[in-house]
Length: 198
Image (tube, rainbow, N blue to C red; front, side, top):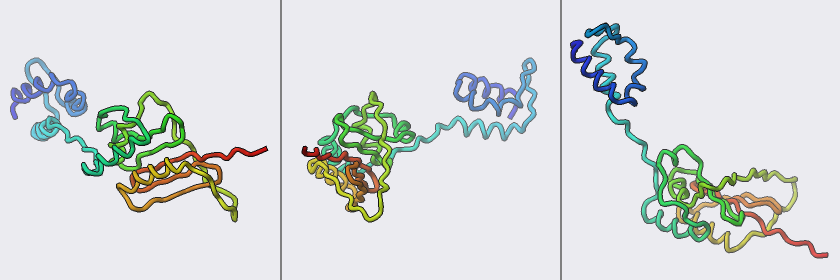
């Protein structure tokens, strides 16, 4: 490559600030001296690197449930939570955890996979600053653990989980939220606390 060709290439690249920022270290060997260039690196290698950097980077696609499961899950999840948004930037989905808490603070669902995140983000309120609860299920040995939970919520949670997986794990402790999860979703359901009679 001749100096003149290199000059044209550099002029073209200088008009694109993103490319120039990415090439800052690469272009250091090129120094302007009047109308000519002093080149301290192999021109062919620089040309190849510039060509690679000009190609648009492929964006990673978010994994999604198939359309039938997706639509069924939206219908079932909307029985517990309200849809808050129509779409979210896919990069945001890949980089962030997604969880949704109902307004009454009775039920929380957290996405465990990309497929679940791409769906649950529709129900996420971005104004809410509610955090995931810290749960410790350790209990004394040889004690029977039992709690009461809303049958309505439990039925809805199990319907959602059964769409994507036939296995469900339960973790519970007396008078403590129950954890109901599968590969894609983790639900935390608050217990019904019995009022002591006087």
